[in-house]
Image 1 (cartoon, rainbow, N blue to C red):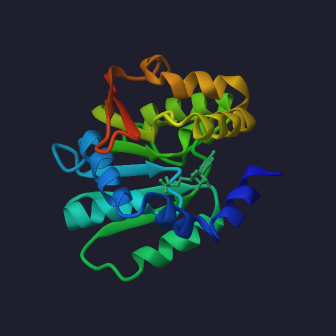
Image 2: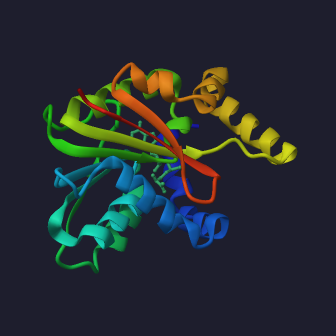
Length: 211
Ligand SMILES: C[S@@+](CC[C@H](N)C(=O)[O-])C[C@H]1O[C@@H](n2cnc3c(N)ncnc32)[C@H](O)[C@@H]1O
């Protein structure tokens, strides 16, 4: 199935699945990701790629109000429809959504102070992921940070088996390799690349700086 169509269909259930899966931890995890991106410090703009229903920009809006210019990008119109509706009641914040492919973004070089990506990099085809990382670096200002969050490999053997099958199905064995250790992949595009476990220990954030 075409991936964009897959996500358009997935958007109909996505927020309910996330709510069931992560209970109240997901807001805290997104806050951790945003803090690691450095947004709100010296940098007053944040781009969230593969934003889905906008959970990261919405969490950043709750943290910084209108002090940070927020942009969410996704290629699925279904996901973005939900994001628009979630953001529609907010006032005093600067938040916009853009429909585009993250491997070819409609932004000028050096536009954003921080770029984030939450739970999406593993789902990209390896060649697409490489282009997305290059694009994330291109649109970041020098000194700006890219920060991505993903699940850690589950400890329970059966859940780990399902997790590996899903990753392999989404992008051949190269996805498993990336998921085990993202640091060398990010080092091709960023410096000072670091991995930190998020609170709760089930997710991790990997971040680096555009030199
Ligand atoms: C699992 S969802 C994650 C959504 C959100 N970041 C979150 O944490 O809730 C993956 C998202 O990546 C988007 N996506 C996948 N490939 C993409 C691409 N090449 N360009 C833009 N968006 C993409 C999908 O449409 C989907 O919304």
